[in-house]
Image (cartoon, rainbow, N blue to C red; front, top):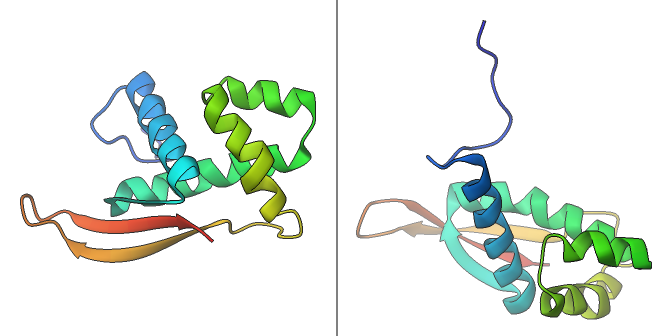
Length: 115
């Protein structure tokens, strides 16, 4: 019997999905706010929140784990600027705001930003 899988597939293979989430997360961490499709934003939110929670720990092991996902530039910003900002916050580091419909293919767009 086929069981429901967790998460969206985006018509991509596993490696491509992970690469998509990594690049979207890197852009979000560096810029603070990005515009993407609503489905990608909803899939990105828990991914980024887990990485911020990991960065809040702040030890060497956490830094090495994050370096497995992101470049050194992104990890430095995440550990030095983003994580200390959320030190007292228990979760909910990102906000998704609907941004209408894209004209070319009628996709629902959203803006995801760090709170």
